[in-house]
Image (cartoon, rainbow, N blue to C red):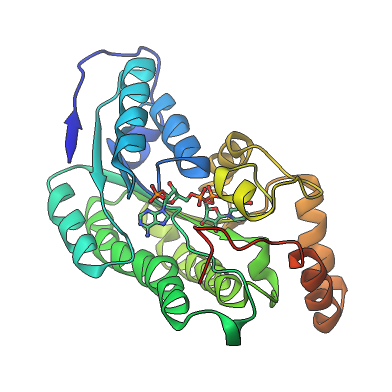
Length: 279
Ligand SMILES: NC(=O)c1ccc[n+]([C@@H]2O[C@H](COP(=O)([O-])OP(=O)(O)OC[C@H]3O[C@@H](n4cnc5c(N)ncnc54)[C@H](OP(=O)(O)O)[C@@H]3O)[C@@H](O)[C@H]2O)c1
């Protein structure tokens, strides 16, 4: 673990630290959407706890945000799919004024469910479901006591209906969306904002590994993050991008569910199992 602290002040930044607390924890921060959240939150004056497995990427990101935005940063490397690591994470950040948790890490084995290695399917549960449940069950009572805070759960349009070839991942993303909606209602009168982001395709290293080309409506990570932070505190779900919003309504509300599932099957035909996505 490395801890980098700077006392540089960046003038004119209020808002997020006052509204939520001084520190934000980004679970799954080393690249892609998580790294974009780190930049956007640091730009808003929040100190960062950066969590992922690849320490070198975290250390570089911590140095970047410290020098660009003058915030404090702490890197904690480990596997969010391992409950003992989450316990260690909780102990390490227990004394911080933790105002926001972004749960961004996910695992998505590609292939027909009956052929994916069972350990890969359990990893979906561990990283995508158990991880956010453990972290939120720990942090939300603390936020409730302080009467302020925020939680952001990264979900996916894949969770709008069944999605063949990434069936377990899609189901885990539906879980995150529905969990966030319930929490949004429970906590909205208590100073705590909760939102899930139903992202369509986003240009990240993980997405490039799995598909290698842009799908319709593909967005840059920074756009997804800005739209999510803008919607935080206004509603329980955000679908960034017009094409994705149209897909959300058409697939989720207009088409028969069986038709929507068939369309998703067509869109996942090209997914390639990579080192990250092999079950
Ligand atoms: N990209 C898309 O098109 C897309 C579309 C819809 C939804 N989403 C959602 O957006 C989120 C991020 O997607 P992304 O494309 O940016 O993913 P990514 O490129 O695979 O990055 C995920 C981040 O989480 C970390 N991570 C993954 N597994 C971890 C684990 N077991 N323990 C700790 N850290 C872990 C990764 O870092 P390390 O490898 O260093 O641990 C990385 O920083 C996911 O929740 C995904 O479901 C993405």
